[in-house]
Image: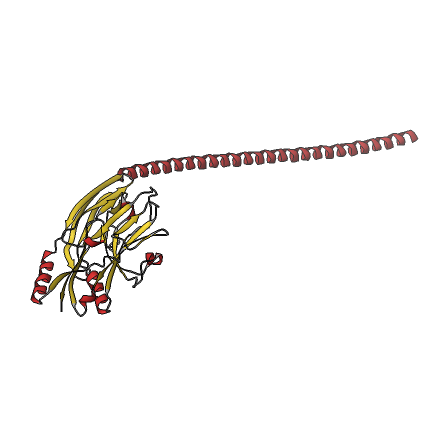
Length: 363
């Protein structure tokens, strides 16, 4: 009996143990499954992230390639446009042409005693050409495509040349101008005859002339007046006077100054134009300070045979007479204070006793 109870007890313990073990195994299996599920989900999530990253990278690469392609196309288009612009620009370039014509004149200006022309230039070409004139007495007052030429006496002529220049070439045109204001001169002469005008040559002060070499010698008195460049490569200016004491009280109606060169030395063209000035150095002989003496410019010349009829000459002569002066004095000088450094004379030389100051006057 006792043994039977023991068997029953062990049997119950065994059953309890088996159930406990079975329950424990079920829990382990469930945990393992959950872990497997979690690992699978993590693997799937990782794979999805990797795929997304790869997709993003592919999109970025595609975008970069697309941008590069667009930039390349834009560069090609820009190069094509530049090439087209260059072709168009080259196609627009054109050699210059120029044609000049008189648009005003000849016109007489009684104030300055000149007969003037005004000339215009008709220009074509691309790029727009620059225009240069051989002479323009207006000093570009009307722009670069217009010029004025002043003629000072009836014997004077001038050939005006205009040049058009651009990157493609050069073109020139010229026109010859001569005095064309005879009617005004004739009218003045007729008026003078009606007034009872007297004509005369003003006596030359033969012992009161010469020339000054800057920072050099003073040739005074001398039988000639000289303007130019000396053998010492220095500028020279000539001076002389006329005796006007006997003209007190007269009214000058006309005045002209004529100089014919005794000799033209060398080539003075580099010195520019020769000017006639009115000066007054007083009763004393010439001195170096008189080289830069105060003056009134009368007229300039590019020809050594000079005939000055500018109205300023008459005005200044009348002023000297009205001021009671016994002398009317002039100077000759070149525009450009330069030297060609050749150690030779370059300039115009005039004998004093051949210079003529011709006047017409009324008393």
